[in-house]
Image (cartoon, rainbow over all chains, first blue to last red; front, side):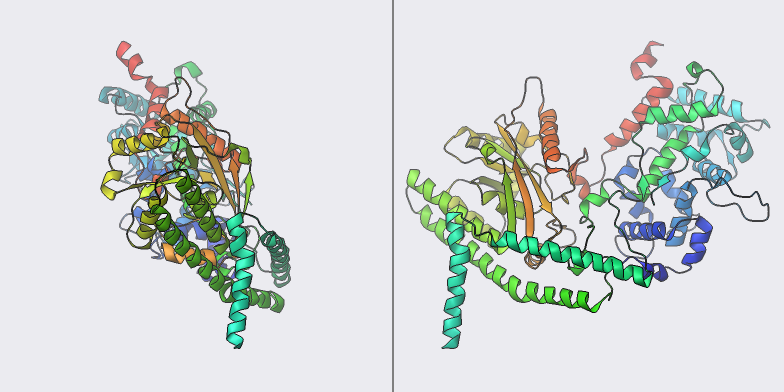
Length: 194
Length: 444
């Protein structure tokens, strides 16, 4: 577990990673240690079981959806780069970023964070949140005693309010519009220590 | 001829400086002097590493005990209300309905636990701020300077060449004497003489074992030491805890009978005075266990029972959930807090990483085991308090005294899965916010 300059050089393409995600070298080193701590069998990548062994994540009602967010469809493992890239969504927004349409959207921008939250709802990744998908999320966040009718009425009301083009699903733009006043930077960012 | 002389000298030294003090309980203070010297050397070593790293412009890994992120201690309700408040202009009275932004709360919390969680880090060794010349606890070791490497090399020589053989000899002596003497005492008829001798023998052998580990222990508040008919509970970091406590007082041990060497020791110990050993099959029967424990405490001629309610070894930065079994018995509880100083050697037994023998070898090749023991005032179950609440009260007292974090988590989480009840708690809280409790719903 040697962690200093020589460790950073062990990680391939670490400069690109830092550029892309905006993490400092100290953060990368910390995340690398965390990655290795979670990778108990020392495979060099993480599988869903490694995430499932995090006790506090198991008690989160949408824990399995969050785990799913790390694995792109078809991929069964997460390497260190992907791990860091996903976590970078939770870096605070860079307020002074120039609005340059030519550079790609940074991974911790407001839009990227919204997209991350959107995919937690949109499990089949068709770009829309259907009524069924909304019901599934509601079911997992609420206790057993809440009835199907109550969940359905909540889901219907939500779609009614957010759905602007009348197709009974919520697209990403409708999602973004309905949340335009929410302080996303604050609520979808973690306070990283120096 | 020369061999004979050096052997005699060696044995005499051993006898004078270690065995005799062990028997009488007196200490020469050699170990404390040793400790102070070591501390000075460690400080120098750490400064040297930092200076060297600065010169070469390397990054130093500063183990941050707080982790990578700062966690907010806000509740589910507060946070979700805040998210909604910022997002809508509507009157808050009507906003007890679901908002799509609610998911942000669960999402962020979930991702934060991926980055850093409270439980996983309790089951791996504590990180140190300074280097103690043991490569096993070093994260920055590189060739910084010749002097440092020489010092480290010297350290290795001393620890493995001198200290380790000495300690192993002592350990064998201590254990051997224990088995031998308790078996002899077992032949005596029951009575005051037997108890007296048994206590003396136990104390002496444990003290030899303490010196076998070079354990430097500071006992606080000895006026609160456990008395007969009581139960002593302590936080658990390693099997050495038993040796540390038993070298200062006499206890009845509780545990499962093992095979091999441990079994031999257990069987001979019980000849001299009553300990409570269970067969593996009996351990599952909670009523049987409770009955044997309460029978023991009712007999005031028998020694206080020593129990570790966490059920497993924790890394000495926190205290985890106490199992309520020992708190249901109804006798006085004497809490004891044990805190190890990790600078000299990490006492935590990570049983998934090291077996027992490996662990003991690591212990004996560290510099020393330094710890503090606080005897807390006795506590009893109060009116209207159930066993779980009592257990938590005792746990909080121990955590506070030892400077450890008081956690609600179950030490069994080291191996098992989280019970669904935790997730259901979260779901219940959230449902309450949106649709009220089941009672409200059935009314409307």
